[in-house]
Length: 112
Length: 115
Image (cartoon, rainbow over all chains, first blue to last red; front, side):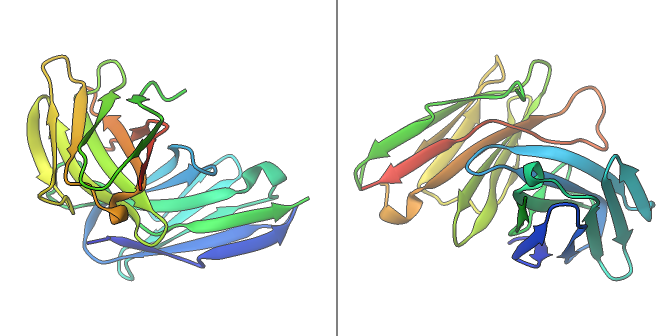
């Protein structure tokens, strides 16, 4: 069964605004990762946050993790039209030996 | 370019047929994963191989099977195809020397259309 669920399913913002998407998951994890998918193409890894970390930054990306609530958020600051894509969270549950379960994704549209 | 190669890019076939999807992982990666992406089901984990051995099974149907060969390439076999099997099938690889904080590198996928 799927491990993660993203929210919202779709998000439309103006260029320059910030975009926030959320991920909730069901079981304890080793880490949580965010991936990006341009239409019909393979997913690309964006950022990984470990279960003992609460916040991580990478360029315009900020990820938070709340293991007590089993949730994560991805913030993209100063969005650009090129950020238009689907974003997925992926969790690696404990003791599964590098298995990764993806959510349903958030479709982000950035309007120029 | 992720370094993961999937062939073919597109496949059109009829119900009841059998197809084979092929994946070459990134150089040095020992793990291969197969995922199915459809509009209503999101990205579903099918199966994982590590260094030639099956490591984990997800939502893989009995009509589907996979294997990883000694050269680490993998094949996903889909048989008795149904209309509902139409989807984008992704291969991903990971697994360098470390066994933690692994991230996946995805191929560009095989779009399967069952008519």
